[in-house]
Length: 183
Image 1 (cartoon, rainbow, N blue to C red):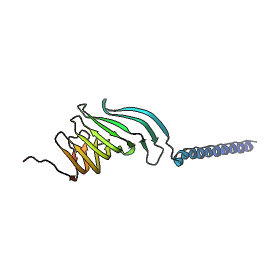
Image 2: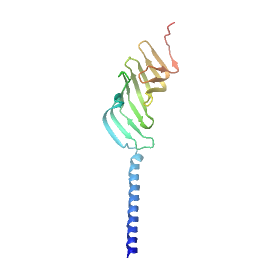
Image 3: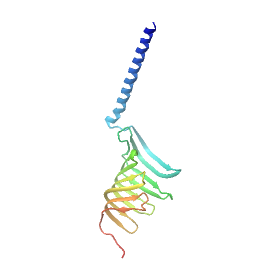
Image 4: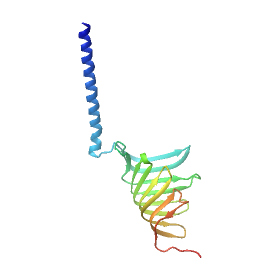
């Protein structure tokens, strides 16, 4: 009798495990449907978010649409309808970034900004580019594409740009055009 009930328990346990693994397989398949179709995990509208570090505001991001693709092998957030970012330095000075399109890769702390990208600093320096990257971990802005950089007294064009987020160490690369030099 004990042998017969033990066999029944083994049978029930086996059936349970089979159901458990088949459910897991179905769950995995359901998760993959979104990936195969190219659909985002979620879509959010009218995004208005702030990031702080040690209780100090460092970034303010506003966008009409954010698509969450964090279910991908390389997770990212897409801003297909543009975005505005305000970066704050240690003295609360603001640098404003505008772009028609953006992708944020959180795993590498990089934001890829595209389409009529404009960066305006509190000192009235302005950068114009078609594509620009912002490295959030280093607070660094860079590109290797053509740029126009305007300061109070200069308009510099070049192939690339490299700077901290408040332009204290701004550098136009492969400068083209005419530059006024005081002797």
